[in-house]
Length: 238
Image 1 (cartoon, rainbow, N blue to C red):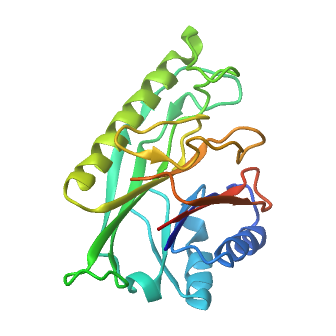
Image 2 (cartoon, rainbow, N blue to C red; image 1 turned 90 degrees about the vertical axis):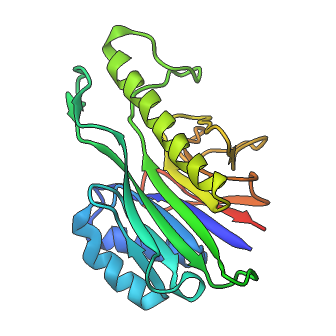
C-alpha cells in the first residue's frame, strides 16, 4: 500500500502555522507528499519536521518540495530534476494578478521503493506541479475572453509538458504519480487516471483543483483541513 498526498499550504501562513499544518498532514502517514506554495524560506521548517517525523525532502531549483518516508524510500532520492512546464513570460493584465509570471517548474523525484519485492527494487517517480491560475470559468470550461487568453495558452503548454514527461517514465516501466494543484477543477492528464475519477468532493470548496494521478484512480481518497485555503488530499494505492 502507498499513500500519496498533495498539500497546498498557503504561502501567507506564518512559519508556525505552516509547521503546524505540515505536522498535521504528516500525522496521516503519507508515503509521498507534494507540497505547493512552500517557498525556499520554509526549508528550515522542512528540515526540522522531516528529521522529527522520519521524512526526507527535496526540491528542484525553481520548483516546490516533495517529501518521502525515509523508512520506505531511503534518505536520498535517486534523482531530483526540474521539469520546465512554461517559461517566464507576460500573461496579460488582470487586476490583482501579476502581469508576468515566473517559469513554471515541476519538481521530479525518483525514489527506490525499499518495500518492493522485485530483485532490483522498483523506481517510483513523483512529480509536483502547480499550474497557472485564472484559466477556468464557473461552468468548468477554459476561459475564452481576450484578457485570459495568454494564461489559458500557458496552462495548455504546462499540461502538455507535464503529461509528456510523466508518460515517458510510464513507458519505462516506472510507477509514476503526478500530484499537485492544476488550478483547474476536473483536470485530466493523458495516460493517467485522476484520483477524482467517478468520485465527488473537493479541496477548495466544491472544486477539486488538487489531484493525484496514477495508473489507477486509487482505492481510497480523503481530505484534511488545515489553516490553508486548500484542503490536503490523500490517495491510497495498492
